[in-house]
Amino acid sequence: MTQSASKGPVALLRDIDRRSKQHAVGLPRQEEVKKTWSGIAFRLGEALLVAPLMEVREILTYPGLSQVPRAKSWLKGIANVRGNLLPIVTLQSFLGRPAPIIGRRSRVLVVQHAGLFAGLVVDEVLGMKHFLEEEYKSAPPDINLARDYLRGSYKHGEEQWPVFSTHKLVQSPSFLQANA
Image 1 (tube, rainbow, N blue to C red):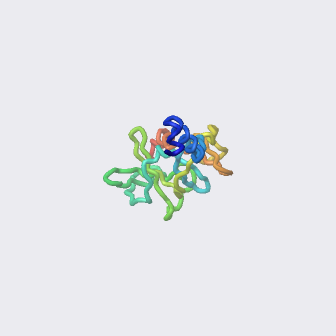
Image 2: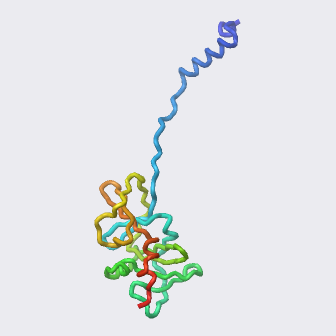
């Protein structure tokens, strides 16, 4: 009879428990999960902005357009996107800046809010940006471009990213009055 068998079942279980604890690896360190906010980063002229991810339905290359007679200069035309008519607005022109040159990096941010469906032409889409919610500042940064449509900002490293609210834009009376 072996020595461990002569100890009895309770002693044997205690011995197994002791040896298991000696060879056990500790649990991974518990880390606090921080909440993040995500948005679509884009460029308007020299300004870098970010729109809330939930406000941008789609990103398109610049589509073919049909002109709209007697429309303001910032309404470039209407595009047919999979059977839906999409008004295309040059965001810089709407904001009172010179019309941008549409290039291969130009993109259209498709937004929909309260039944309004529109495409906003931006100079370039820079991809998704993720920020820690604690990096949010409710006061918009000191920039003149799009000031009425900014909703705070996020700081990422040394860069300040103003949050551009497409919902504020499409609800504004001046955006809804596209006739010249």
